[in-house]
Image 1 (cartoon, rainbow, N blue to C red):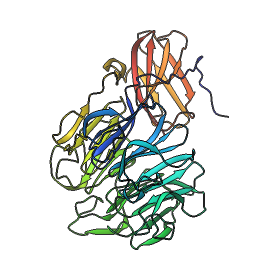
Image 2: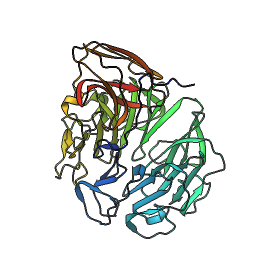
Image 3: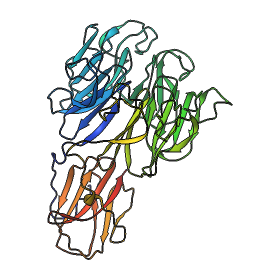
Length: 462
């Protein structure tokens, strides 16, 4: 049995700080974000209707896509966007040539989110330029769109305008596709698979159906971009890369090896990874620092320069990055305080800051009513200790301040209050409680007296 919170009261508040973005995804030249109130927002290029707001015009600031408030997951594609609602239905907007949206037609594009089939058990989607791959909650694998190079993995070159199941196995865990014609997936047993064309050297030969690439059973996460290189995380947080590395995007010296079909380990322990379309890579280490490497022609690495590098360089000095996503030449990222940041190319307003000027360093995108006040994040190590950090099943706190406290609150990365409890009024509190019910990610534990925040501390739930 899971341990229960030892505090007296445990309440969930779903609507706190509803203007914050809880997750983000960078498309080719546009960006998409989900707010904690279930609304979907987008900005950047809108030429093919990929913003899903009913127009084909660019937006230089976040603009709501429709009026629905029950979006759960989403992904920005080449010139389209996909999203899954809380009821498990799958929707798409934007470029649809070759049946890329899977909506059952080859209409050039649509500027509003259109339902894909009738299934209500979609879990994940991985779009490309002319095809898409999807995963359902029963762990079955599906694909649709162009199929000239076996990119759908069904053993044929037949175009599919609606999702078709790939094989009959139901043991797929995560998926990722490229702008080119290949896809990668990890099964529930942790093995790595791929199919499609070998254009770009991400795989060494054309594969007509999902084929085992590596039999190790500890693969965990994937990131692909243009199709020339791949990043992958293992369950032990080690990072691996392979494919074309002509600008250092795989983390090895491009003067000694242009392409590397062997897995190349990139030093460090990592929580999150992202691949840019124009041959660059980003990652967040387990200490919350942000790193970048590869091509940097418009400052997409965010290090303040336009110099390429095959050695990962730290972006700034902050240690509270929690999520990063890359487009063709731009990146967007979230911090644990709910703030949204962007840098790189901005030709179509994909940075969301109201302009079209490229940025070589991360700049915050102001979102009214989003982040908590600075007071909420005053960290005072001397009077509040939270341990272990990172934590898995149990978290302990030790408060020895002079101010009284009567409330303990936990916020998720968007600033939403997920736990609120009321111990005895005290200025000396020691407590341990189970956190197994929390999803993996960064949280803020705050001690309050009535509505006043006394002290806060960030912790990571693994």
